[in-house]
Image 1 (spheres, rainbow over the protein chains, first blue to last red):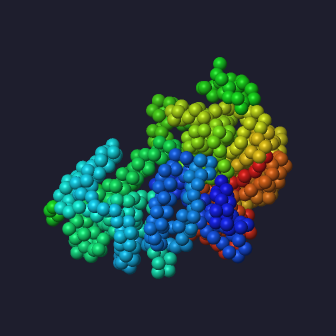
Image 2: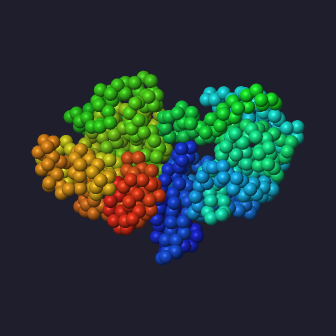
Image 3: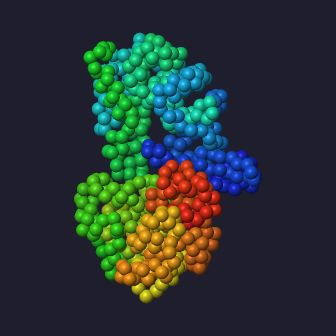
Length: 303
Length: 318
């Protein structure tokens, strides 16, 4: 099957008589609904390598289609340093798309790596938001969205306190919206030489508040969220000063928590995985949110 | 009388616990759990639901066998078209059958095994998951109760090495060839057989890991020698034959297959983290492991590394 995709790539990209080589890997813990194969087409001394993502069954077509269409749209808008989708389609009713392989490594989490990459990431996000600027949304509408998301996962988690914090920190002005990466962390930022590349656009969405920089901060060091001085410097130019980053961080964590649980529930229904309960306890966003709320609950933080 | 699916060549001899049986003799064959625990699991699964029971198992290997979607990474090797018929020979706990049936509702899966207990469990999952596209039957691998040319894709995952264990008289290799011929008989012209199996010269065995019969270096040494040793020390014949790449190729050619392709599986075919084409084996091992013996492999040429890969997936065509 993976060879069939290779043959289609040869045809689509007019690569002539290439030899197909591949390594098939399952997706990561939350991404077990897909496989991610490295597919190389050899032609004499030359070779071209692609990352091919295939749904493990037809039921996961939507998730992969969304990721591919996000990438294609961003590429059309001229967003640089993202994977370039070169082919997509169906094999055995299973959706796939192929992107050019980025031969880069993951960022290692450390204070120095954070300080080095922060300006670069901020610049890239600035370009993304300018090019995809959508409009504005009221803070009440964002709280309403969050309440709905929390309701749909209430059988697993109770984060009612998060809404109180959002109410207490809600900005008086409307929040600008644009297309966001939606899941920016060290695993999705790759480095090659001195250049950063951004991958995994499965959680990307348009008309969302600019939360990516906060997502990245909370993954690198959640304590930074409580340091107003560092935080304001880190998010400047991306988030207006009058918007409390805590408000957006909580909005974003619950958004991602909701998306992850939706995927886990679907995997539980569509596949035979039996450990939904265990997987839920390991959802990273739940831990981060719990941690953040408990830190905010300490007496020195008054809203 | 229950209706028999159109692909079956005859009616079963008997129904045991709702399982169509084409053999009568007992043959318990699970190494992961003893028979009492399996029956306990079956009873609990019936009454409390299979997912709850599997989740509470102390033996995580069984849980993983049944529910880890990564286990069926090999489903990416051949096409499973809508409406096709799939044979899972040696279905065991049913992990391959269940994953296919659940993911591809338009595909019909024939889950066959000689061990009754696994099939009963599989039947419970089938009913609780409302999977109408699995046909469960008990039979031997040498006599598959399916019509000629009725199957599009056949899987034998971790099966070929065991088929000769409880049969006396004939050489294990002869039995293996016969089983492969029998599977070929059920395949359509152009139908594919996928085998998941260890490499006789896999580096794990070269490093001294005991093979199926529990003998260190058992697969690496000449078969005649190891058979003598097995008879002397274990008081039984050495019958769990595994082969090298060339050995499997010969076996399959002898059974009448063509277009035989080999794929490397790392760290093993049972829970593969990666599967690759033959020419990418060195790259696969290098990218997945940073310690131990596999680290040494990076210094060897691919031609050698592909001969000592731990396991293979083999795709052969009728």
